[in-house]
Amino acid sequence: MLYQAEFWVAVAFVLLMAVFAYFGIHQTVLKALDNRAARIKAELDEARRLRDEAAKLLAEYKARHAKAEGEAQEIIASAKAEAERIATEAKAKLEDFVARRTKTAEGKIALAEAQALADVRAAAATAAVTAASAILSRSVQGSVADDLLAKGIAEVKAKLN
Image (cartoon, rainbow, N blue to C red):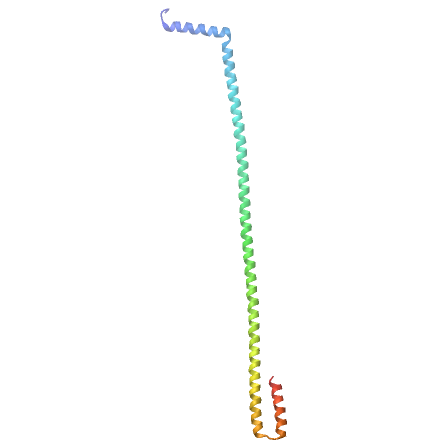
């Protein structure tokens, strides 16, 4: 048993552990491990805090994005409504303009018809006067004829115009 390598390795290990225990190395190692665990815990806590902060910022930006999207939809809807209103007003103004132009044109046509009718009546009156004077001048003669002719022409003119 004294010549086996495992025995001497076990003895050396026990002696090494005793030396470590005598000098308090186990406390130094435990303290270093505790410090490292505390540092890792602090880093994990910081990472959680940063993750929570990032999640909060993400939620805030998503809310802003949704709000901006809603405002954009409202602006688009408002613009469409305004465009429809303007188109309706333009259509009404165009219809009003066309109606006024039509009424003006109808008035001009009626005036032209009245003028043409007056011109035809005047031409008919002139033709009737000329025919009457020709007939009367052949059938009646003298001063009586001239007076009668003048009266008749005046009456015809007055009645036809």
